[in-house]
Image 1 (cartoon, rainbow, N blue to C red):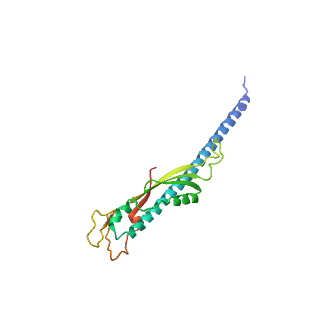
Image 2 (cartoon, rainbow, N blue to C red):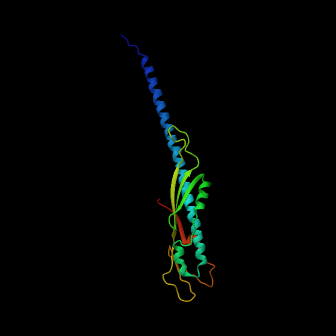
Image 3 (cartoon, one colour):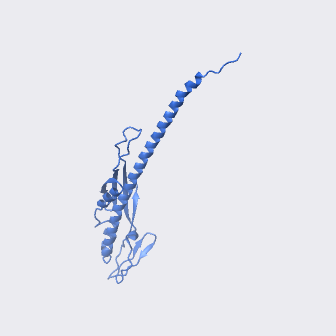
Length: 196
């Protein structure tokens, strides 16, 4: 006696196949939504980093200019390296964030630091994840201006200028009669991002 194969099993597999394919498509769309959100978050972090660094670099350049103006008066050097006389450059942070398609809030964190919070102008967009359509990516960055030189503890008598000791064992020997070779902003101060 021979048995005939039933064809009814094939009909039962088809709904399972459709369910598995639909589930895989949903997972793929969910991963796409997560990737889309990650890209927006990355855009926001880039805008925040650039904005904070721009504000700090503007302040660094201003402090370096103040140091050049006060180079003949070493008693003012310590104040300049502490950030005295530098103005709030948050407008530069806001401007740079706008160039990166974001809105920024900037806060000076003392005379030698800026904290910038950024939100992207464009939302994450529609996706299979509910509630993402109107959400904007947010990020925060802190930029620090670090003095690279140590103002002298003792000022030589007369009209002489003290040697300016900077990082990497660089000594700037300053001659009041010839001030053509002065350290630049990047020699006097380092600007970098710090942990928020």
